[in-house]
Length: 326
Image (cartoon, rainbow, N blue to C red; front, side, top):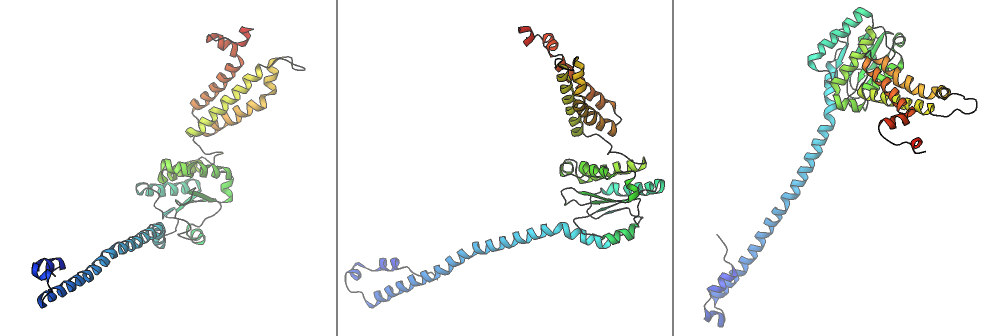
C-alpha cells in the first residue's frame, strides 16, 4: 500500500473546499496527508542509514583482509622450513639438506652423489644446508648427524640474507684452501647482484662446482674462473700501467738521470704493480686461457707506445703537434 502524498490530497480538493472552511472529510484527508508525510520521513531515515553502513563495513572488511594477507605472506617463508625441518634427516648418506628448496630437484640427487664420490676418493667432506634464517637443525644436530671433523666443509645457504652463503671448515681444510679463498667464493657467488642476475640455484651450483673442483685438485690459491667484470678491471689497470710507463719514458734527463729509460725504471714500482700484480696476476691464477692474458699485454703496450711516441703517432694520423708548431 503506497501512502498518498499531501500534494495529491490538496489537488483532490474542489475550489469550493479551498475557498471555504474545510469539511470533516477534508480535515480527515489533510490529517492523512500529514501522517503520510511523517511516515515517508521515518521510512527514509533507515534507508539512508542502511545506505551509509555498507561502505564503512566494506572498509573494515577490506582492512581486515589486507592485514590477514600481509600476515600470511610474512609468515609463509618461515612456516615452510619449520614444517620441513621436523622431517629432515641429518646423516652422512644425505650430504645436502635442502630445506629452502634452492637446489633444482633434477640435480639434487646428482649433487648428493658427487659429494659422496668426493669423500670416497679424496677424503674431503662437503656438506650443505639450505634454510631460512636459523630455522632447521641446530649446530649440535648437524655435528652429530654429519660427524664433522677437521676435513669437513659445511656450506650454509640462506636465501633471506643479503649474501646467501656462509662457510664453516676444519683446520686441515685451511692447509689447502685459505680463508681468503672462502671470502672470495662468498663474494663472487653469494652477493645479491650475482644472485639477482643468475638466480639462487645457479649461484649455489656454480659455487659447489668451484669448491669441489679445488678440493679434487688438492687445493686452490684463488677461486678458479675469470668473470667479465673482473677481466674488465684487469684490462683497465693494465692500460693505466702502460700510460704511466709511456709518460715516464718522455721525461727529459735531469741530474743523475742521464738516460730516459732510467725514468721508466724509477717508475717501475708504480706501473709494474698495476700491470703485473693487478693486470697479469689475477688472470694467470684464475684461468689457463691465453686470450685474456694477451689482451692485457696488448693493452699495456699500446697505451705505453701511444704516450711515449705521441708525436710520431700524431704525425702518422695527420695531426699537428706542439713540436711541429715550434
